[in-house]
Image (tube, rainbow, N blue to C red):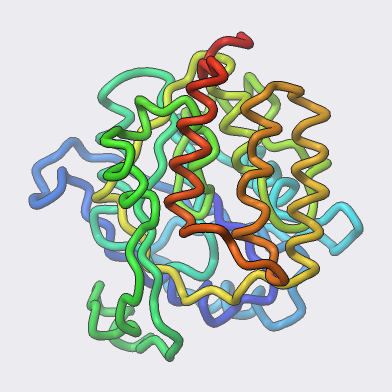
Length: 302
């Protein structure tokens, strides 16, 4: 498991505490095949005491830590690639530092991959309200009462209902693989060269990776029982929107396909200075319908 972090010491500690309590069996029991897991924290230049927190963390977690000095190349793509270089397992799970995972999180990712080769799996993300987390309770076990309440479910599930479809059936499924909660066969990641480190700033480095994997024959799948609870995120800023636009332009240059350019449809929903013409799931459904009309095929450019 790879967790990039930057000045997120407190939320990272809560994330790591939740990883102490993973159950290795199938959902609802502990009867599944045993597995071991490693946790690789890639510190992308933090100055908030993250390294000291890691040094004092309970030793019962197989935890490795690496520090990357901050440069103009810093970002999620570079950090995740640094973690990939250290990983030893055949399955790579990606997670963000501001999330707490439920006890069957890893087992559910493993179960989805056991269903077939070459799968790219996206897990479920629940948004939490603002508020503190009870680290003492989290250290002794997963407890929803130790966390702020859930204020929003995973928006992709409403999209699936609108489309009467699943991620596996969508021609734009690659766009909805978010590396805050995703997993990949390690050999597939290495075959495509990992994340593109020329994506810096906010947005789309995960979609671009998933796009390349799908072009190489991978299939996208959604794991509703692989659940993370995400600290209520900060609204998109003007700087974040500019970074997203820059990364989209780079994405289009790399992959000049109609469905890639069509991601522009999300701009009004992301731009903090504009009002979107509909909800996110309405826009995402239009993205999928338009891509189908254009004849997009997840593997047409293989």
